[in-house]
View 1: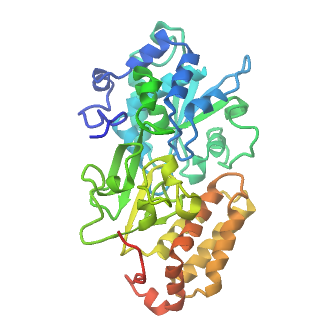
View 2 (view 1 turned 60 degrees about the horizontal axis):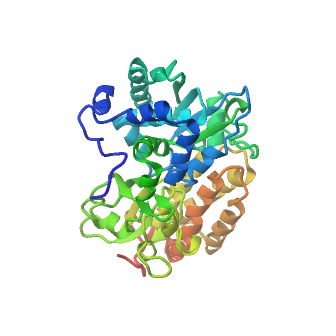
View 3 (view 1 turned 90 degrees about the vertical axis):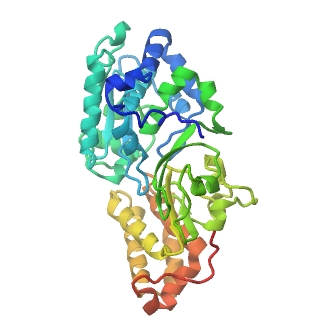
Amino acid sequence: MARKILTEHINVPGIETFDVYRKQGGYTAVEKALKTMTPEEVVEEAKKSGVRGRGGAGFPMGMKWGFLAKPEGVPRYLVCNADESEPGTFKDHHLMKSIPHLLIEGMIISSFALGANKSFIYVRGELLYVVRILEQAIEEAKAQGFLGKNILGTGYDLELVVQPGGGAYICGEETALLESLEGKRGNPRNKPPFPAVKGLYQSPTVVNNVESIANMSWIINNGGEEYAKIGIGRSTGTKLISASGHINKPGVYEIELGVSVEEFLNSDEYCGGVRKGHHLKALVAGGSSVPILPAHLIMKTANGEDRLMSYESLSDGGFATGTMLGSGGFIVFDETACIVRNTWNFSRFYHHESCGQCSPCREGTGWMEKILHRIEHGHGSMHDVDLLVDISKKIEGNTICPLGDAAAWPVASAIRHFRDEFVWHITHPQEATRPGAVYQGEMALV
């Protein structure tokens, strides 16, 4: 049984309330941090833990904290990115609705470490009921002296604000989130300056994911070095995975980083295998923005080793044979899935969600959607396949924020690994457009 850090008490009845959370050891890390540690010592524990950003980028959180500018007389801010808009990802939503005080405790510890006296939780606009859950948790914590003025008599003040967003995927990008938080349109900013120097209200700001911040209570109670012992290599600790698609047990699972993809997919503890009578065709390991891999490449690395659920193992071989852990949106496709239709569906999303600020993304996402639409609906030409690859190359790396890359990678990888399926749609338009029709050519199924 894998060790649980974030979900150990998540099924305890009433855990969403302060009293029950407190009985399970909640807020002891706040007491330890504020009463016995300096902010610098808290930052050092985060660095020792090696915990990496769980929103998708995987950048070491302690190192990110260390970049925060500390000019005299200027406020500093911590912003929790709870926008969670990546298709296939729903682990932050699960954590906030089920055990909100874990996030609140992490916010208090992290704000103290950063010297922030006002911090924000930016929640995806569609999740208004989660906003209410968090606001209730904040009120409970404040009533018990864990928020507000002079917390626990330590002289530290903290105001915590929950802000609903407008339901825009682009606001998952940290600078677009800050623009939205300031009441402006959620357009990403040019960098530099980075948020650590000029972020919210032009003040030094750290933006961290829900899961990243929620780890801090365990890290403070048990030590960063103990956290670093969990996982594998530089992929330390545990990770929440949102599992969906053609599996027997979809849901949110907490894994120790380093478990094999095969074990996560097939064991009864996790996904329970591909649905009965079917075989694995392809898999998206980290949400819709990461490259899709066929069955044989997601199970084994380019060197023939077992593919592991870790940042390094999943990216082994680069995009030619690897992918990314990303936000942990684990989407499974069996042989009944149409890769062309799925890629078109992803492209529709990214075209719709592009802010339009950068020409390659604004125009390119629309072109990709149109081309994929005509291939899927029996009007494509052989030129279209290479045209899609060319467009994706012209988008990738040429935009202010990573949304352009997120739109390009699924298309490029789908063609790289499933070109025959795209060609079949073009050469057999009548058969391909028949309801329920799926390419049945040579596929490496597991």
